[in-house]
Image (tube, rainbow, N blue to C red; front, side):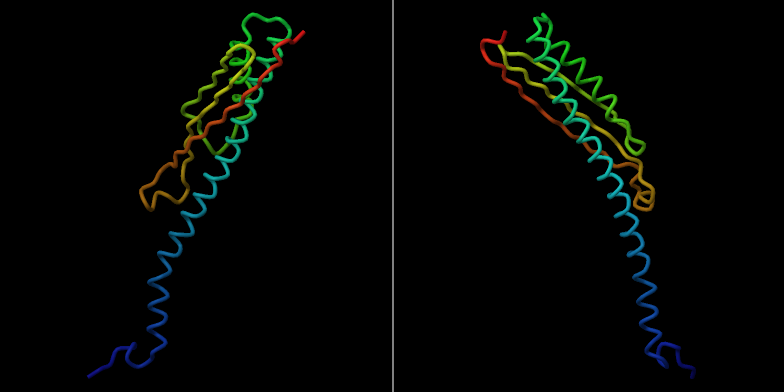
Length: 148
C-alpha cells in the first residue's frame, strides 16, 4: 500500500494551503488596485467640482457688482466652462454634469454635480467592468446690500 506525499511530509500540507490561498489574495490585491484608481479619479473630479462652484459664484457676483443684468446666467456659464476645463482626467469618463447658479437678491448660490465611471483593470475577474461614482459641491456668496 502506497502512502500519499501529504502523509509522509507534513510540509506538503502547508504548500497546498498556500497555493489555495494565493488565488484569493491575488484577486483581492487586484481589486484594491482598481479601487485605488477610482478613488484617485474621484479626488481629481471632486477638486474640479469645488473649483467650478466657487468660480460660478465669483463670476456671478462680479457681474452683479459691475451692473450686469444676467449675473446668474453668466455665473452658470462660467461654472460649466470651469468644470469642463478642470475635469479632464485620463481615468474617468463623466457621464452626467450639472452646473447652476441662482440669485436671490444679493445672494448667489452655485450647485455643481457630476456622475462618472472608471473602467477597471482587474475587475473583469469579478465581472465588474466599471466603477461609478458621483460628487457635488455648492458655493454661496452674499454681497453687501449697498454695493457701489
